[in-house]
Every structure is written in C-alpha cells, then in structure tokens.
Amino acid sequence: MNETNPSVTEADLHAYADGQLPETVRARIEAFLTDNPDEAAMVAEWQAQNSGIRSLFAGYEKAKDTDPLLVVPPRAVSSGAKRWAITASALLVFTLGAVSGHYGPALLEKPELQLAGSETLPKQAQTAFTVYAAEVRHPVEVFANEEVHLASWLGKRLAIQNLKIPNLQPLGFKLVGGRLLPVDGRPGAMFMYENQAGERLTVMVGRNTENRTTSFRFASSGNLETFYWIDGELGYAVTGEIFRETLRQVAEECYRQFPS
Image (tube, rainbow, N blue to C red; front, side, top):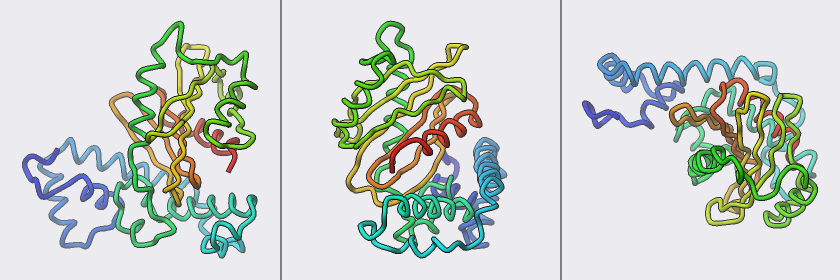
C-alpha cells in the first residue's frame, strides 16, 4: 500500500478515518486518497464502521454512577463491578470513534484505554479457522457430545474457572466441538460452530498476562472476518466467512456468556 506516497502509512489512514489528524495533515491525506481510489474506499468503509458503532451505542454516552470504577485498581473492584467497568470503558472507546483505528492517538494518550501490545490475536484466529474449518472428519479434538468434558479440560488448561462454552443456537449455530491450540505461545482454546447451511465459525480464547485493557475491533482478510476483544488477561476472537452483522451478533452473544 501507499507505493506512490510512502510517507502515508496505514496508521495515518486509520487516524484520518477516526478524525484524529490536524487540518494540515488531513489535507495531505485527502490529496493522497484522491489519487488512490482503493485506499479511499477502504477508509470510507472504516468511517462507516465508526458511524455504525456510534449509532449502536449512542444510548450509553451519558455519564453513569459507575464511571469512577474505571480508575479503581482492578483488585479493589468486585467481579460484578469489574464487568460494568470493562463495559463502560469499551463503550467510551466506541463513542470516541476510535475503535476501528489501529494505533489511534486518542487511545494511546490514556493508559486505561491503551490497546494490548500484541495485534497477533486476529491473525492467529484467522489461521486457525483456515486450517480447521475446512476439515471434514477431524475439525475438532473433542466433539459436542462431550461438551462438559471439553469445557472442564480447556478451562483447566487456560486457568479459567467454570469456563462456559457459548450457546449460539438461538443465532442458528450449533456447537461442533473444540480443541486446544497455542495462542501467543500459551495454551488457548478454539470452539467451532456450524449452521444448517454448513457455514462454520470459530471462537478462540487466549490468555496473555500483559493484557490490561479492553478493545473491540474488526479485522478482515479477503472474505474472512474476525471480531475480537480483550477482557482483562483474556483475548477472544470470533472468525468466519459470514456477514459482518451476523459475526457482530455472535461476538456480542459470546461476550455476554463468557466469564469476566
């Protein structure tokens, strides 16, 4: 990308889409986009995502009594309050319009909203989907008929107490099963689901003790879409070759069901 103007980076384009650039820099980016229609279309899609996210969470823009919890040290907050704090923090990011911008300056200015240091989660999730979703006989290690064992086994390997495998049947996806796989060099879990049309999606869970923040993002690779987020030390990624709106609904349902 940006071969005609190497001074314009992908980070610049994300910052432009998020409205984080001064006017003088914006003019340079706009000139670049005029000469590069593919990049202009991509930026327009990011801006549309921002607009949709702001509309979706518009009702949460007002200050709440739970807002002070955002600055309370994690160990001083109960699990229920922690969940509310994480959600409020994520919604604040959404309303600022910085969710879809990689390396957004507004995110980096505030430690409590700073993104996790690694951006490898969606790539690992997409790789896992590509490798296993195409399998006919061995897509998973443990099939859905042993769901209780699957949850117990992977919960122990990831040090997650009472790991609950999301039930996505109301959205039309039935559990196929799951497997253990590496995520950032540590034990991770992948659950696979399938609908009546034979379309599959995967839900990946990984642990990284360096995670301290919450972010919600989309990542695309061809027809493959991933919606991923960080919740404390755990990272989650929902991946599939399905409509983005369907993927978003699945991710929201997973977020509600996974432990904090």
